[in-house]
Each structure stands twice: as C-alpha cells, then as structure tokens.
Length: 172
Image 1 (cartoon, rainbow, N blue to C red):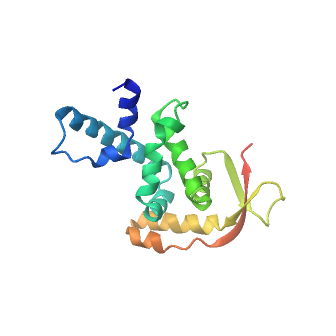
Image 2 (cartoon, helix red, strand yellow):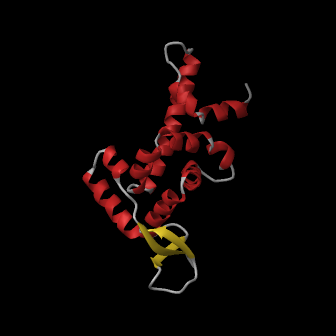
Image 3 (cartoon, one colour):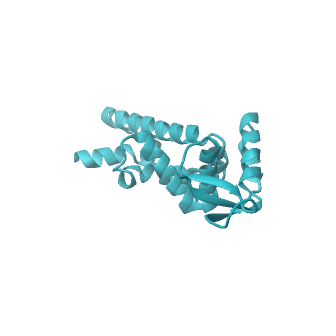
C-alpha cells in the first residue's frame, strides 16, 4: 500500500465498522486511528454548531456523517488543519443535502459572531442580498431551547421549520 492509500483509509467511513475479531493487530490499530479521526471531526462540527447539528444529524443520520468523513481528504486538502477541513466539509455536505440545513448552520455562525454572513428581516432593510425562505430566528430559538433541554432525538425529527423571509448578506 502507498502512503496516500493508507491516509485515505484513515478517513474511510467503512473503516469504522470493520469486525475486530477478524483483523490483524495492525488493522486493529488502523481502525482505532480511523475512529479517533472520526471522533475529532464530529467533535469539531458539533462544537461549532452545537444547536443546529443535533437537528441536522437526527434528520440526515449516517449518510450525512458518511459524506462528511469520506470526502474529507479529497475535498479539503488545501486547508491548514483538521478543524478547518471538518467545518468546511460539513457545511458543503449540508448544502448538498438541503440548503435549509446549511442556512441554519450559517445563521448559528452569525449568532455566534463567526462566519461570513449577516442576516436581517426582509422587511427591515434594502433588497440587496440573498433571500432565505425560512424563519431562521424562530427555528434557531427552538433549536437553542431543545439543545439546552437536551431533548431526545425524536423531538428534533418532529420539528417543523417554518417559512419566512430573511436576507443574507456577505459580511463587510
């Protein structure tokens, strides 16, 4: 095996589910390294979006995490560290799986004073910017309430994101 294929194997979602009994000791160590990297990636993503991610993860489940983890080395090789790569990849996957998920993540960034965008009510300011068709403020407040109450996963799956009208602008 080449060094590149060894590296890609460490970011393989299927590597997390190999049966330990049938593996050599070297394979067991690789599986442990794969698991450790997955835990790092999920920790970075869950800490960045601590209110949005339980909702997104409960609705999208394993396909979301598989896409984030499997595509990490290919799609984020130019980034300086695992944190930046994890955040960038998670946002891209959320965008691909449903733009509402990515909007919730961007809005949470806005509320935490990070990210590249600002938001305001469509009725308050000028027409410049990108119109978002969901009520981000109400949705985010509900997600904060759920997160602080540590609600079980099934409640996130029952949450309805209401339509609304907000404007997203690039932060200047």
